[in-house]
Length: 131
View 1 (cartoon, helix red, strand yellow):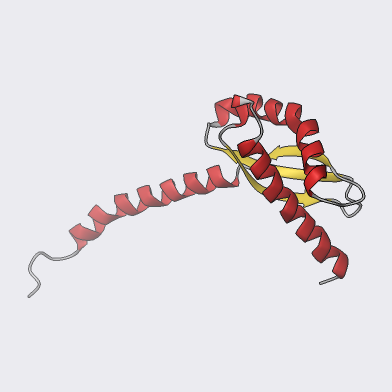
View 2: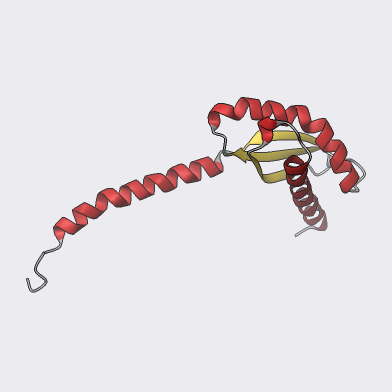
């Protein structure tokens, strides 16, 4: 693993942790209450950071949550600059991460498939174990 990659990865993780704390404790915007940060990708030159988020509020609130995060990005970036000491603090770009929602949906589908298969499996087994 190249040294630069390890540093970029550490900085991305630090940005994720600090932003999550800032969103949870410092932001007063009610639109971003149910936001969880899942990942941060930082460009090699630290100019941009993609901040991936998910929400429990549901897809119908996604536009207003995205708008709230976009409006708060200047404040978040300034506060981040007070916590992380790097030469160039990245511009923050918030991107919705549907993986948690997709994982939940797949899990429900699997549960439904298992439940529907169980009665069929019970019918195939004989009632009398001596048979």
